[in-house]
Each structure stands twice: as C-alpha cells, then as structure tokens.
Length: 174
Image (tube, rainbow, N blue to C red):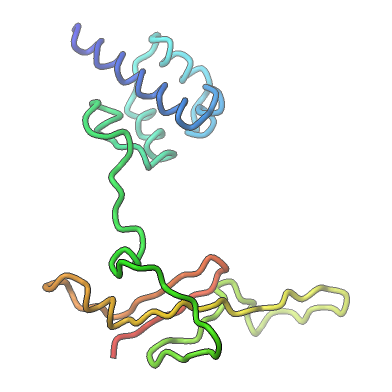
C-alpha cells in the first residue's frame, strides 16, 4: 500500500509540474483538459487519486508530455522530437527563388486550400476582395529528397508541401 501512495504522490507532483510549465492556474488547467476545477484541486491536495480519465485528458490536451514520464516517472518530461520537417532529411533549409520564377517540371500549381468554389455566389460591388498572392516557393529538388531517404523504404509517390498561408505544392515522382 505504501508503494501505491508514493506513486500517487509522485504523479501528483508531475501534474503540478505540468501546470507550472504551462504557466496555468489550477482552474485554467482544469478547463484546458475538460474537467472540473474541484477534480484537479482534490487530486493536487491528495484527497482523490489520479484517475485514468484525468491522465487521458491531460495527455490529449498536452500531447508534448511523455506518457511514461507522467504515469511512471520514467524518461524525459517531453516526448522525444520526431522528424518534424522534410528539411530535416535534406539537412538544409530551402532557399527562396530569386529573380524570375522557375517552373518545377513535376510540380503542380500552387493553389489556396481555402479557395472559393467556382459555383460561389458573385460578390456585391461593396464587398472587399482579398487579393490572392502566390507565396515565394522555395527551390526544392524532389529527387534530392528521394535520394536521401534510407534505402529499403517504400517508394515515394507524391510529396506535398503545405504553406502557412493556406497554399500547397504537390511534387509527383515521374
């Protein structure tokens, strides 16, 4: 019984550490994970045990935290980063095009993801139209990406680059 109480106490300390790391109050944390303030207050005071439901809600709301660390205190507080960018494979950041616009032979046209359908209602003369500008497309040679992927991987069919302005570019293998 003593070991279980110690584990609960340590888990409570880890939850308190998450709350502090996020810079939240107990009530803000409770709201952010979708539970009542009383639930978190009772857990942190030691009155109630940490339930699986609360652990699941914490890890769903804050996926950057390591599950093993939260439950058992093992490993690092944060999950180990996984390759987050295709540029991690390339080992370099893409350089924006300079001067004239180059056409990639296998690149599709960059189009807004949230573009209005052709069948949309015409806009009135008083409504403002937002100009649709094309982003500066970085120079990426898809073949370089493919060549740097570890041998034995499944063949790449298509690479899609999503830009923060809601546009994308698709590169198809020949």
